[in-house]
Image 1 (cartoon, rainbow, N blue to C red):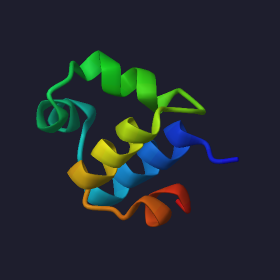
Image 2: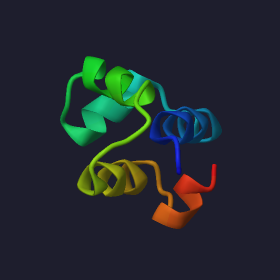
Image 3: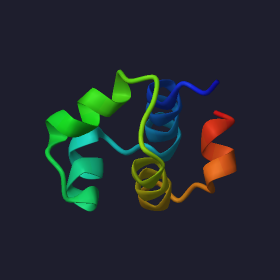
Image 4: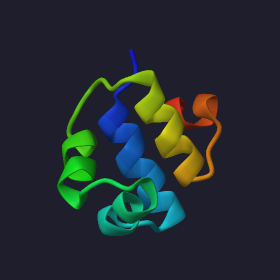
Length: 64
């Protein structure tokens, strides 16, 4: 099983994108990104949107 939050934190670190910038790109509040950073699971559409915003393929993202 993947840990979405862990993958998101690592992807943000690699891409040097903070939660505020990612939230602005995704059209959500910064607090929502912080919630995602601490979640094990997420909806598939959320994962896809995050991957597009951070320029990752879904399989690369979950392998982080």
